[in-house]
Length: 343
Image 1 (cartoon, rainbow, N blue to C red):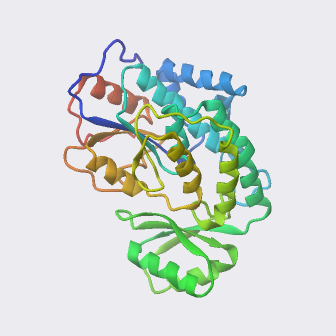
Image 2: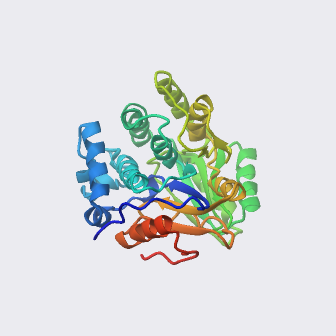
C-alpha cells in the first residue's frame, strides 16, 4: 500500500495529541500488517533494533508464553513491555516524518515512558536500560514473591469503589484504587494477597464482575509498589532529562509538564500513585485538543474512557486502513469527525 508522501500539514489545524498505550494492549503478532503496508514503520522499528542491539521485531511473534506469560509463570520477561514501546515509537516517528507534528503528547500508565521518549525527554537506550535494570528485577520479584495483586472490578461507581477500599483499610488491609474510568464503571484496586477474600466478601452486595490477577505486575500504581519508585529514582540519577518537544500530560496529576526535573519526579512517582488517565484526557480537551491520535495496537485510550466533545475526533494506527486514514485526515485536513475506525 502506498503511503502519503510530500504533503505538509496545513497551518489552520486544531490541537493534536499523540497518546500512547500501556503494555496491557499487546497481542501476538501485533503491528505486522501495518509494518508490511508502510515500509517507513518497519524502517523505524529496525532503527530501534539496531540501537538496542537485539531484535524486538521478532519478539512480536514470539511464543505465547514469552509475549503473554501466564500469571505465576516462573520466567518473567519484558517482551510485552518492550514490544509495545518499540512499536509505538516506530509508528509515532513515521507519522512525524510524514509531517504530522503533535501539539501535546501523553501516555497511559507505562505508555508515559513511550511518550517521553518520543518527545525526546530521554533516548531509546535509556528507556530500555531502565526496563532491564529496574523493571525486570521488579517483575522477577513479583513472580518469586507474589505478595500483592491487582483486582479489576466492573459495575461499581467511583464512590462505591472508594467506599469498599475505605472499608478494607479500616480492617487493616491495604486496598488502594490505582485507576478508575467513570464511563466504563471500571476500577482497579491494588491489595495484598491475604486481602483477596475479604475484598470479595465486601463486594457481595453489589452487582459486579471481578478479575484478580496472579500478581504479574504486583500492585502497580499503589503504595505496594513504592520500592519500584525508589529503584527508578536511583536509576534516573545518572540520566539526563531534556525539555520535551511538546508538553507532556502526566498521569500523576493530569497536567501538562515541560520542566525536565518535574518530568523526572512525576515519571517515577506515578509508579506508586493512581493513574489519572481520564483526568489527563479531560485536561487535554479543556486545553483545546480536538484530535487524538491513538498510538496503540488496539482501541483503548479515548472513547471508552470519557465523553468526547462533538468537535473531537479520534484517529488510530492499529491497522493499515486506520493508519492511512490518519495520514490522509491530518495531511489533507479531511473532516473525519467521529468516523468509525476499521477494526
